[in-house]
Image (cartoon, rainbow, N blue to C red):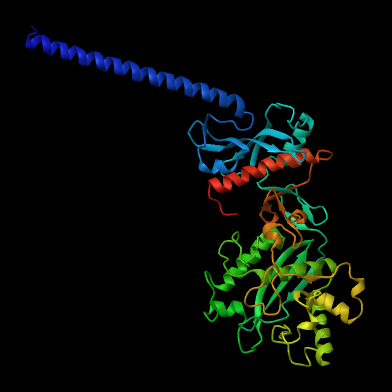
Length: 453
């Protein structure tokens, strides 16, 4: 029979043995886990340090990866102070000929600029191989670039490799102007004036004057509370949009959506369609050397054709020398109709003047503005069915014949942050690496819940 003292000693020994056993198990677990962690970090170091030098790497776990089967893994690299340095994306993308390119893309954590590129070893018969020589040339093109990336069109753009600034080709220095030929429901006529200096858009102004000469211009009216729009006052929104154009130079890069708004210019909630279309007309006028004075002469030609008097004689000129007249009651002079007599766009003043003078055939191209979709203020233009700057599809025809003209890797061209030329004689190789970089952008956009910026 066990005494009370013996029972107490037995229980104490059992507890000590249990605690000791648990400590051994837990200690072994941590030692094993630590060894496993070290093995994983050693593997990560051997694979990723060539594109991103970091102390430790942590694998990203996100549901967003479910939408990107081409991505095998995404990792965040940290320095010795546990500060994130960048992302490493391990992925496989398909080349134009259906082969698989496996590679690593490293991106700076703050700017998401490309900081490193490396090919994974090519495996299998379907592997897409890039020579070391071509890969070095591609890296020279892409490292340091902001994603997403597209090939620049040599016909339309010039890229300064030092500043990454993009300018439109063919712009002639001078002051250029365009105004809408009809007023909106508030009796305002939008106008845009740009100044080109050294082949770049150096100044831009967007405002609207009222056909009621007693009213103020839209910007002044908005500052005084007489013209109300959602968000910031209209004058501030106009300033922000003009500044954004000076930065990007190309109105297509303002990412106008089919409803006329944009998400990429801070503080701008108004309909930017009048601005985009008028800037495009100014750009074509600049390329043609059709100055503001020429434009005013064109407006006079239209008035003389309709009323046998020019703007001054009709007293349609305000204190700012704008021709304050809406051609809304004369849509036939500026409207483009299809074979079914449906309005599908409108002509530029340059084209109208050339037609009135019988010289339209001498124009290199007919400057016709075709809006993507009209809003409630655009009473004279029939809406179209698409917005090529948003979805990249050409109108009409079956889906097989619709061509993506304004997008790359399912991203609108207006969203592109960098433009590069392909490596000479290595177009497919460059294009496939760019596809990998743009895939990284699409994942991060979803993972970080980015707005396009």
